[in-house]
Length: 111
Image (cartoon, rainbow, N blue to C red):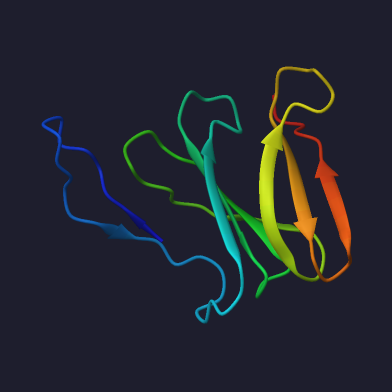
């Protein structure tokens, strides 16, 4: 994945590259941005059917994502969505799993 920061004048700086997931992405992949951990910085959530997990990259607010949190989610996760399922004000993770023919919901337990 590449991140390009805006320069404030309608352009972008050079890309910084982040290795996530499998090197060979022959399958469906999904990425989305949201403040998952409540620190006011955008985080990246990513999944592809080649890896049985969702990768959470907490953002530092400066365009860097220094750590990866891997969340096991099934056999062939093909897409993800965020929604507050339990009404607590935190975005929860919904994952469609083609391999298990299922939809999984993981509730956000961050503070």
